[in-house]
Image (tube, rainbow, N blue to C red; front, top):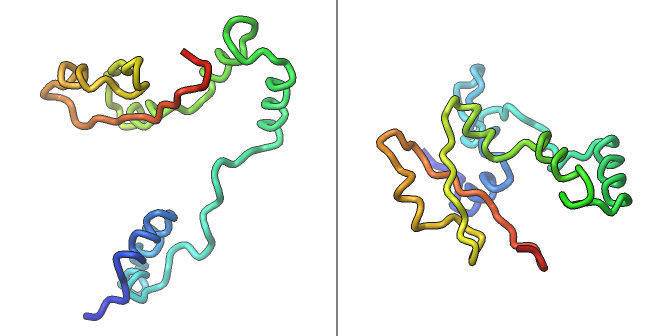
Length: 137
């Protein structure tokens, strides 16, 4: 069987989120789309993030207030109550997250503390992006 699939095409499809749609096997042909079958999805996925009008109004209100931090406003606290954080990916699997502190020098997960957090029930380690903010702690 001949495949018209190169590593570059596979990586390109995976990086744009199209691989799942191309590999899906429609019942009518029994062939994955990547091998000539009919694709399940024919339109591109929407871009992210999707910003609704009410989101834009809320962000502009925060920007104009000048009260972005915990010292003189409640915007940070309200944002944290509504933001869909990475931990949701763990919770939706009915798993219990175990948090490991970040290294204050690098703002990355503290490698020295990872091993102590691993038990026989550990199934994965999920690092999250951390950004150092100029002028921040």
